[in-house]
Length: 141
Ligand SMILES: [Zn+2]
Image (tube, rainbow, N blue to C red; front, side):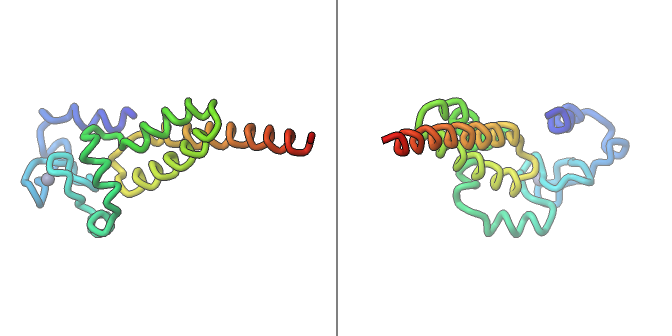
């Protein structure tokens, strides 16, 4: 995700030139258009901020467990997508995938959408395959 990385490499730029403003919560220089401060992780967008305050405990746990910009649920969805070659893991992959997408929706600065979608796609694919297998066995008898 180059757009996220780019932001981190601009630390030394001239603040005015780079369109930076001080964060209203911690005072660090951040992009004027940023919706979330990357220093104190406060939401600058009031709507997002309110949503985050009222947000689920799970998304908070995600951030605590994974200080990097990818929620744990997205990583889990990615691995479960691979494991969905095995029965039942596909269902978990779908569940984690959709959960990860909801976390990513609430936290626009996080990455990991690809993994979440991968988990969902693989999960659905293999769940259908196993489902079809079970049905055909049942019909066969
Ligand atoms: Zn801040």
